[in-house]
Length: 196
Image 1 (tube, one colour):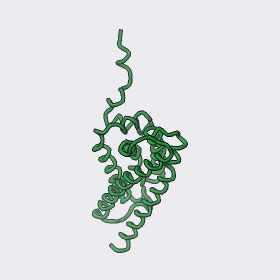
Image 2: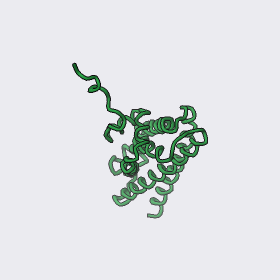
Image 3: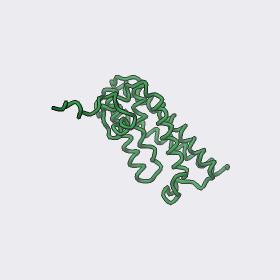
Image 4: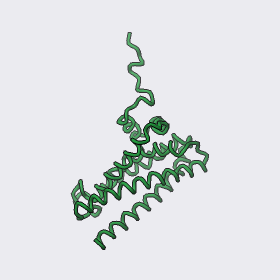
């Protein structure tokens, strides 16, 4: 007779990075608890945030997709300017990740959440993965909204808050971060087109 444990899904902690990514993109709360509690995953989460920022920055610069796909979001800048936009995307991603998570953490604690900053930071790195394609019209925007939902799942799972309180933590802050990043991106675009 076969042992039924052979057919069970892997225990938390036994998942590969790829399995964790898929589980978190599917909004599995247990996966967010797993990545949040795994301190050995810090380099991987930091690398993922950088890759998300680089990909979004390069897509926004029109390096991977033609201007006809990106519409007015793409630029006619040269290769150097496009790569510079990728670097700006990395910097913006790290700032948004660190500051946004800190704001989630502080507001979540005010609402009765129980977690530490690093736990939430790790989960938010996974929740932000869908934002890599955010500059692509419609598809990127839809995945950006999915990321906001994933932030709610992460806050709920790792801070032990209700769904309503998790939404109260995430929605105002993501709106502010999106507005701030859009302003910075618009300002840098205007600077590049005006002075260079």
